[in-house]
Amino acid sequence: MSATSRTILGIETSCDETAAAVVRSGRCGTWEVLSNVIASQHDLHAEFRGVVPEIASRAHAERVLPVVKRAITDAGVDLGQVGAVAVGNRPGLIGSLLVGVAAAKALAWGLGVPVIGIDHVQAHLIGGAIGPPGGDVSRPEFPALGLVVSGGHTSLYACESFTKIRRIGATIDDAIGEAYDKVASILGLGFPGGPNLDRLASEAGVAPVKPGFPISRIAPASLDFSFSGLKTAALYAFRGVPEGERTRAKREARGEAPAKLLTASEVAVTFQDAAVGTVILKIERALEQIGRVGTLLVGGGVSANSLLRTRLVELGQSRNIDVRLPRMEYCLDNGAMVAALGGELLDERGWVGDEWTMTAAPTTSGM
Ligand code: KG4
Ligand code: ZN
Image (cartoon, rainbow, N blue to C red):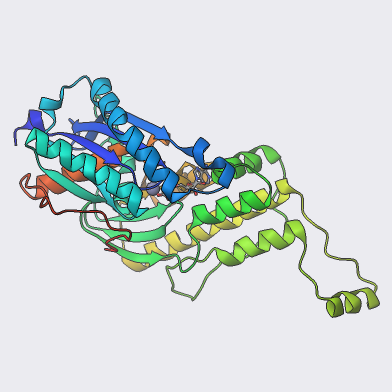
C-alpha cells in the first residue's frame, strides 16, 4: 500500500453517536484527521434518561450513510482514494454495532478495499495521538500505561504499542461514566449527566465536604476500580440515609437530628473529588507496579472531565510522564480513533483486512 493511499474511513456506531471520519498517515508517524463527523442521538434518548437500544439502532440506520457521505466530502477526498474501511465492531449495543458493520462491509466490498473490525475500548487509547491536518501530534513513546474512562469501562492497560495491550485493572461494578450519570440523575441534572455534573462542580465555588466520599482501594495492590459505594454515598448525602422505624426511634431517643443533607453543588464537588481521586490513586499504583513508562495514554468520554484533566496534567508534570489527553472532540465516541487504530493494525498486517465474515460482538476482546 503506497503512502498516499494510506487513507482510512472509520465508522463508529457502538452506542448513541453515529460517527464517521477520514484519517491519513501524518508526517509525525501518527494519524491526521481530515474529517470527523458525529451525529449525536442525545435528544432522542433524553426523555428516557438513558440510551434505548432499539431507538439507537433505528437512528444509526437512518444516519450512517449521510454521516459517511459528509465525512468524505469534508475530507476533500473522493471514495476512490479510500484505502480501507475500519469499523468499531465490539463492544457495544449489538443492534447498533451491526448497522456500522453492515455499512462498512458494503462500502469496502464496493470499493474493493480491506475492511477491519476494531475494539472500541482499545480505540479510545489512540485518541491522544491523533491531530488535525498537518499532523502536529507526535508519536508517543512506548511502553505506555493506558487509561480508559468511559460510560461502559474504567480500565488500565500495559501497552507495548497501540495494538499490543494487556488489561491490568478494570471496574468490578459501575464504570466511572455510569457513576457520573447516575449521580447526575440523583441531583436532577439532565442526560447525559457527566458533562452537567462536571459543569455544576466547576461553577459551584465550594470545596469538597470533609471528610469526603469514600475512595475505593479494594485491596492494597489492586488495580481494579469500584464506584458503586461512592454512588451510594452521594445518594445518601443528598437524600438522607434510609432509616427503619426502630433506628429512627432510637436516634430520636438519643435526641439526635437526622444527618444534615448536602446541597447539589456540595455533592457534585465532593463526588467528583473522590471519583477523580480514585483514578489517580490507581494510576499511581500501576506506575509503581509496571515500572518506568514514558507515556500515559488516556481516552474515553470521561477524559473530557475538567478536574480529571487537571489532575492528570499535574501527575504528568510531577512524574515526568508524557500524558496524552485527547483533544475534546476525540474524547467522546468518534470515527477518527477507529480509523487511526485501523491504520495501525493494517500497517502491521501488510494491509490485509479481516475476513468478510467479520461481525459485531457485544463484549470487548478483553486484551
Ligand atoms: O466514551 P463514551 O462516549 O461512551 C462509552 O464508550 O461509554 O463515554 C460516555 C460517558 C458518559 O457516561 C458521559 O456522561 C461521560 O462519558 N462524560 C463525562 C464528561 N463528558 C462525558 N463525565 C464526566 N465529565 C465530563 N465532562
Ligand atoms: Zn466510548
